[in-house]
Image (tube, rainbow, N blue to C red; front, side):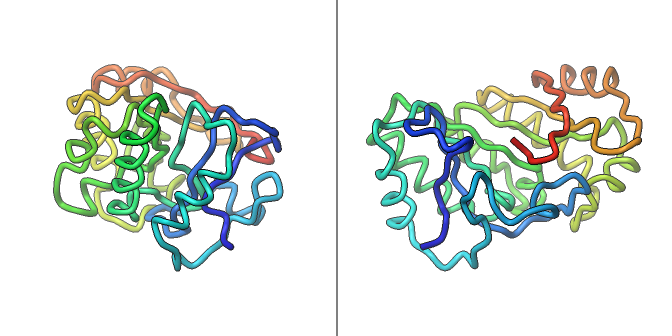
Length: 208
C-alpha cells in the first residue's frame, strides 16, 4: 500500500502525522526534498494517486493514540487533491474535532481552480503554511519554477484569502539552500501586510 499517512523521526506515538495525498505539483522548487530522495524517514513517498478516501482513513486509524495534529504535506501540492482533502478534513472534524489541521501549500489553489478555495476550507483548516519564498516575482520564478502564470501574485492572493477566511496563516520562506540572497525583512513585511505570520525555514539537507 502507498504511503498516504506518515510520521517523521520514526516516533512510536507521534503527536503530528502527515498526509501525502499526491505527488503532483505546480512548482519544481530547487530546494525540494523530492529532488534529493524518495522517502521520508523510510516511508516511500512516490505513488500514482490510485487510492480512495477509505485508504487514507485506514492508514490514519493505524496511529494510536490519536495524534494531536494532522498536516496535509507530502511529495506534492495537497490542494491538487482538493475534494479528497476536504472530505478527509470533514471526517476529522466530525470524528476527532480536537485534532488541529494544517496544510503546507504552495499557495496556487485559487489560481488553479479560479475560485476562493480558502473560503471553501473555512472551519476545516486551523492553519495554513503558504510558501512565499521571495519578496519578488522574478526571484520566486527562479526558485520555485512554477507551471502557472503570475504564480507569485497568486501566492500573495491566497495568503490574504486564508487570513480573511479565519485560518491562522503563515508565510514561509526557505533560506540557506544555496548562495542565493533572499530579502528576509521584505518577506516579513509582505507577510504582515497580507495578515500572515512569518516563518523562515532554514534548509535542512534531509528535510527533517
